[in-house]
Each structure stands twice: as C-alpha cells, then as structure tokens.
Amino acid sequence: MVQTAYWFEPSEYHARLARVQAALREQGLDALLAFQPETVTWVTGYFTRAYGTFQFAIIPAEGEPTLFCRDVEEYYLDSTCVFRDRVMWNDSDDRTAVAVQAILSRIGKAAAIGVEMGAWVLNAARWEAIRAALPGARLQDATDLVPAMRLIKSPAEIAYQRRAARAAEAGMQAAIDSAGIGVSEREMAAEICAAMIRAGSDLPGPGVMSSGERAFHLHGGYSDRVLERGDIVQIETTPNSRHYHARFMRPIRVAEASDADHALAEQLIAIQDAALAEVRPGIPATVPDAIYREGVLGRGLRDSYTNKTFYSVGLLLQPNGGEPLEAHPGAEWSFAENMVFHTYVLAQGFGMSETICVTADGCERLTTFPRQLFVTAG
Image (cartoon, rainbow, N blue to C red; front, side, top):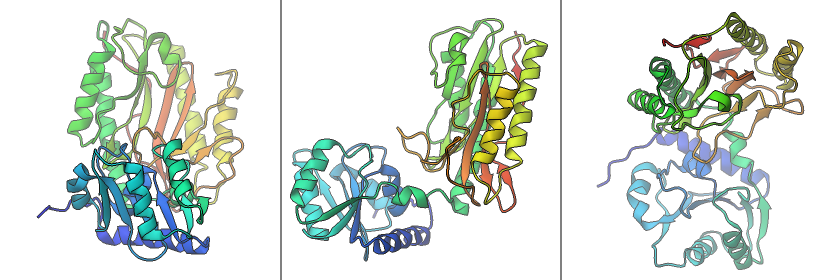
C-alpha cells in the first residue's frame, strides 16, 4: 500500500474543490478542464516533477475530479492526490485520443465546459483535437477562475512560505560569505544552492544572480565570470517549500563601497519603508506603487521606472515565476488580508526587496534579513 504524503489536510483540498465547484455553478458551467499545473496541484493535491507531460484534471460542478496523467506517475498520484478517479495513458498511446475519451466519458458531448485556455501545457494541436471532439459543447475560457482563488493564502500555505523565507535567508548569507575577489559566480551559486537546500528548499535556485555589467539588468543567471574588486553582485534568492515561494534581494559590493553606494541603499530602504507603510486591506495597489515610482524618480535615481512593484507569489511551478496579480500604474485591484507578495525597488544595479504577507491592519515581512548594502571581505 502506498503511503500518502499530502501537503495539506484532505479537508483543505475538499474546501478548495467546493469553492471551484460553486464558481462553476454560478457561471452555468458543468465542468472545468484544468490544465495549469498549479491548478491541478492546488485543487487535488496531485504533484509530480513531470507535470510538464500531458496531464490535467476534469473538475465537474458536482462530484469528485478525475485526474488524467501518464501511467508511470501512478505512484505520485496515489501518494499525493486526495481524489481517486483517474485515467492514465502510456507511451504507446495516442494520448490526445485518450484525453478526449476521458472528457467524453466524464462530462458528455453537450456540456458547458470551462477551459484553462491560457495554460502553457495546452498546446494548439491538443486544443484543436479536444475542440473538434466536442462540437456540441459550449467551451468557455476559464483561465483566471482558480488563480483568482489562490491569491488569498490559507494559514497552512503561509507556513510553507515562512519556511521558504528562512531558506532564502540562508541562501543570502551564503552569497555574502562566499563572494570575494577571484571567486566565480558559479562557485557562489553552488554555496547558495547548498545552503538553501539544507534549510528546506525543494528547488536549489539560486535565483537571479549576476555581476559586473549584467548586475544592471534583471534576470541574470550565474556564469563562469570571476568577481573583481568593486563589482556589484545582484542577488535574489528564490527557494520554495512544497513549491510555495518566498524571495528577496540585497545589494552586494565586492571588497569596497563608496559613501554614495551606502547612501543609495539607504534611499532605497526609505522608499520601500514608505511604500510598505501604506499596505493594508482595502488600499488600492496604485497607492504604494506610486510611492515607489515617485520616490525613485523624484530622487533622480532612474530616468524611468517601468517595472511592476508588487507581484503575488505562492504555489509556483516552473516556468511560472509569479501569480497573475501585479502592481503598476494601471492596476485596478486592492490589497486583501493573507495575500502574499514579492515587492521590490531597483536603481543603479542595486535591488532591495521582500516577501510580505498582508495582515488585518498592515503587512508582515516574511523575509527578515538585515536590509543594507553588504560589502564582502577582499
């Protein structure tokens, strides 16, 4: 008998399913075809590292879901999924044909069906085959249905993010300790990854990491480049626990830093403090967003500021790097209790960021590492 390894209590999954089904009924839908890996895992518990293979969940408006996946994943289906119904394909099958038959057998030919059309695993060929097999069905885009529900985290979800935050801090300390003249980015990355894994991260990272001229550009990855005196190292540690994420940035100078460097870091911290002071339930996202932008531009730290300033993080499976809720000048949403965000400010190669949780009357930093410019030993 397979020993179960549920990430949450079964009651939490049943509550999530009930919310999804209530929304389906409200929209007049008979079922949801959930292709996004995060939706499948969040609603049913089922997780495998091979979620990029063709798998999905058929979630009816009444009754239990059906899981569709490759047969070699059956062990993980048995150990992580709280629901039992499944249809499996093997490598010699026409998997799209098997998928169509599963949908027809569970939903029928003339149902009203919500589909996660924006899911990256649903390619055009698969979608066209499914649509052709359901000429009598009403197919409706429901890409945003479940992601909107996932924005408010449960206490158990936030507990995983707190653990991820501790791993992020271990990774950042390893970055600071290992950086120095003559050290390669690759050597630093190895130390960061090891520290985060030992501290509980399910994936090694290390996250955004670059030095030299690449430090002035987002989303750099480690290379063979060797650090030199005076380099900026841009570092954002991005671990996760049960694939629930927390992350943060700190600026690092190699061996030396000027008074102007320290002043810049202090300005970024002051701007961030002012922005975070405005975060609480009911406050429009544009309020702290404007504080970030006006703070940076008003001090002449950048000529323009086009980055988002907050984005939601939670259960994220690669290649996804964030949930679909972002703060920018055109944002039309407000903060709510138990939302979790990565929030950041960037200028002149320096990044300062935190993962925060919105509380009843403000926000809490889940990442609590000292905020300053770090200068490594020579």
